[in-house]
Image: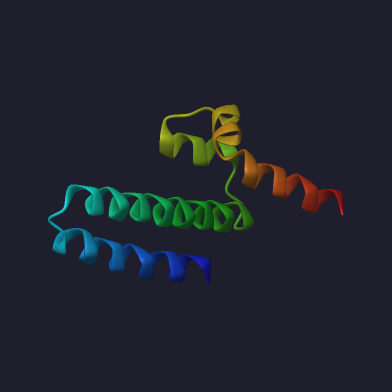
Length: 86
């Protein structure tokens, strides 16, 4: 559900960005776009991991090693490790 919410926020922010002429308003719209895109990315990575994708495979999408992907997405990797401990 987070992915759908993030997608909706991206659409709204894009429309808002295109309608703004004030540079500071565009900065704010850009921030909103980035935050929603990061949420969408995290959701996609969580789904990929749940579906069996390895950190090496995810890293290759970003030109990163397995370790690089785990570091970049350390919150997801950490949550995953905590879940495995339970």
